[in-house]
Image 1: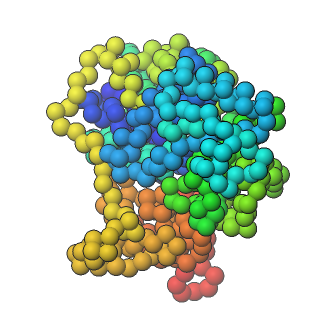
Image 2 (image 1 turned 90 degrees about the horizontal axis):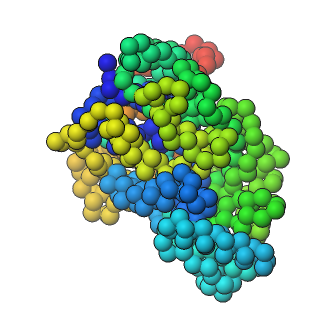
Image 3 (image 1 turned 45 degrees about the vertical axis):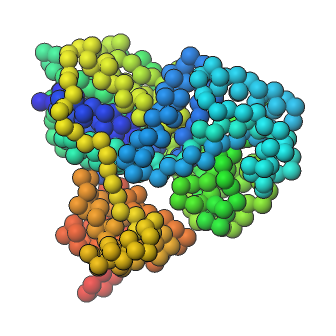
Length: 477
Ligand SMILES: Cc1cc2nc3c(=O)[nH]c(=O)nc-3n(C[C@H](O)[C@H](O)[C@H](O)COP(=O)(O)OP(=O)(O)OC[C@H]3O[C@@H](n4cnc5c(N)ncnc54)[C@H](O)[C@@H]3O)c2cc1C
């Protein structure tokens, strides 16, 4: 029996596992998919919001501001790409300038540091390629960008090192309670525990209602994106938001930690898993982005994708013990800014548990993680590494400069990859301009060899995403 079962290995579940793994308790992290960070956590803007946007007094405001401060240090400890690039909310007229003042005041109330309202000249000094219509901005120095899936993977890897049992491909299907003990049944097995942390993202209401009464509803809201190649990435230095107005929240134009430019998202209510991209939404995003910069070359687009926000009907995060089931805690309604807030949300879960029984810290636990990123090393460091292990001398992904050594490292990590996209999330192989056109075959080959499987069993990503179906004729695939 476990002390705690966490349901859902997105960034919120992984952060909870990371912090709880520092305490003397047994923990299982159950996840439907074959990898962590494989839902909203892998498909978002990757922005660490400063915290001027949420309503003062809301849970979003509290955890956003705390999370944005914590994430900076945590990313350093976990060797996760993080860039404190700052953000600008762009104004186009006097009404917008008033909105910036309101956002500034809100930021002050929320405790956001280093916020400034800038005039046109100051704004253009920071971001020279802005649309000529921009007349000012709200500058948040604490705004940052991160690699969101690396963040969750790193949190989960350290949690596993500290003893958390990660059960991938385990979809929770029912929950009952007998004599104060939860019985959690998945498609694979049955587990028992004293406490449940529900971090099931867009399904968190469904999971809660497996045992509890209806207390909230999750509304899935899809957002779509363009991901542009690195020469476009050079055009933007800060996270650029458009001032919210009666036309809506606009779209963001941001740099990514990998050097690309990302443009989006829109907001559209959809069915749970509808991750389709549509011409209508992408055209809208392209047209709206012109207000930010009219020099974006969309011919440099290398990928479109969509993510689903788990918006709650309360308009705020739901971070509370269930009212109908004792010892069942909901971390739900995790729409934006939950990527920013996740580390603070997970950090405080122990406070709840310690009101029920006293969990003490372990004498020894791991807090950090280190990764080899070959392309970031100096010439001397590269030579030294290749001399030790020639696999680092073989470039597999030419666009992102990823070596065979780095890909092989993943298989010795606490959460080895089971698919090509899992390798991509861990190493960046396949993330570049050719989108794995050149390296895909080599990555598939490594996966086949390391997992000791047939070629037609190699997955692109989730279960069922086999890259090959059948042999076309006798012989090799
Ligand atoms: C378009 C978009 C843009 C965003 N931009 C930002 C941003 O810039 N900054 C920011 O701070 N936030 C942003 N967000 C929000 C942020 O991405 C999410 O809030 C965050 O990733 C949510 O993490 P999570 O762990 O709650 O959910 P998820 O990452 O969705 O993880 C939930 C997990 O639970 C699992 N699960 C569900 N049901 C079960 C079950 N029955 N059994 C087992 N496992 C289950 C799922 O498979 C999934 O892996 C954005 C979101 C979207 C969609």
